[in-house]
Length: 394
Image (cartoon, rainbow, N blue to C red; front, side, top):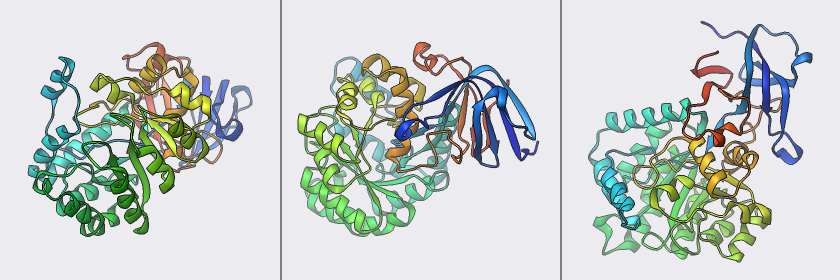
């Protein structure tokens, strides 16, 4: 069926718009919304809704902006369920497990990587994620990193070059040589496919000076900066992100007061990844500390085969509310507008007039059900750029 030019969604019990003061959380009750083309044309009380070419009755359900997942690792082959089971039995997480996936990814043909990537992207869409970022980092050779990013660019504009994930085995005796490769020939091959550059700044991966050098090379090549920061222990990652003008510092599990100040006083978004803490039996980030200090907080899934093999933003919202001291409103904002800010996007993450019409219809009357009913499939329908992309209209 061809899409009509405009669609009125009425009978909305709660419409989360995120168009409050300075783009903060905001919601309307007994509301309606008009989609025109690929954008939002009108929002307001249902009783005052204008006419449209087609009408959808939400039947007292809630409507939210589509989730913006700003941290995911979807270009990989293989799986690591045995590693997960060992962690649940008491073995601590270490960055070196990444190399298991590197071996499988290098051996996989493009068709296998593409099929896995698209399967996970479809999972995300079905759970309300309408925009996602996708990193490389499981190839760690020039051709493998470049092919992975080219595959990711087929389905998302938010592509991140993560050659600086870990040092691969063939460079174990020459980490400086690998760093030169990441900043030189590998960057040159990967930059045409990417919007962002990232680095895993952690003991067992890359130190502060090395991470800064990677980001400097990437920004000189026209890529925006992102940082895996302070996941496994206190470290320099957040400060590196602040000094580099990065869009986000991701994980932020172990923070000093100086780190919190840096996140509160700069535009760097603190992207929290509770799925990783769940999957690694680590302490959860203290979102309340960051929010009370004035930092901008985003939520993302960190979907990857090792530490956080979930594609579900609703699951991460529930974890954030239960374990990270976020209110339901804060968690939903972080998963929508927060993710958009981490990607430096102003067209998504909200449902103000002019926004891209990415929206979720919940099988529930309120956003709070995402945490109130954890594990229950609540996404009834998803519109992406104005088109019904997943689910069905009730």
